[in-house]
Length: 380
Image (cartoon, rainbow, N blue to C red; front, side, top):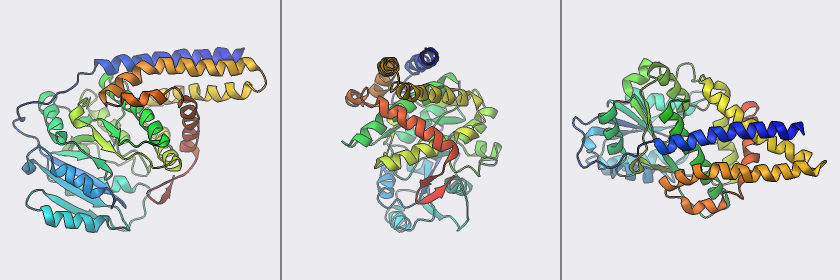
């Protein structure tokens, strides 16, 4: 019965953690649209790394063009990361057709051998930027019309030096999309709660902002530039160490960036392995403790399931844990789903639990010891 006792202890610790995130998420004030533009208006350089994004890049640039924020107060820098499709040509055409409406520049990376091309692309874009604030997003995203306006209001009202902002997946009626959507909602809620309570640093590179001068104050990506992933969270932690009280989460529906989910299960696992690969590189040991607890808790389900083949009581414990885990997490994900207007997807939440446990174990293991494929490259 020692196995059930250990699992029970892990469940208790996990429950306390989820209840903390639930309470913290609900305490975050929701920023609503302001009727008056902030004066003086901050200026923004939007950095967009792009590799083989011919299917998405124009959609993103069109959404940027539709910003309610004055076009004179922002610029767009697309950094082409060795694309071998028509990404660069499409951007050049867009620049020609919209040069009177929007400031857009295209920069191409040189043929350097790196392990972190995305960091190099962002760094190159920042070096070429001319505005006060850097705003990062991904080439497969769509940004809302009030996106920059929302950042500007937060900057004017609270004076942050790093802003993490919400990201949501575009919806499709496939099982892999629904599963990712539910999983990502949980991550978004944890991100917001942890930043608001300043308990550990989390963000998503598809939607964040920081002053250009602060990027150079912390020496940019120096020290983390050999890690394939982490252009968002690892940089965020460097900035947090210098400005621990000035990291904020922008809980605004007007700032939600929509992005493409992985198109299939293989791509999804590769993405999560890439995210998990940052874990051993975190200088923020607070988040490592959380990740370790979550991994152990999920791993205990695998142990119970295997033990259940030899003793039925462990199989009953597995099923009970499945139900209790859902009960503990449901208030949290329900509240987050309401903010993102995705309540209709919660009907799948209970049934996806075993799959969520399995992928957490697999991605956590391979993220620490394996390699993964990203944008056609094999990295580690």
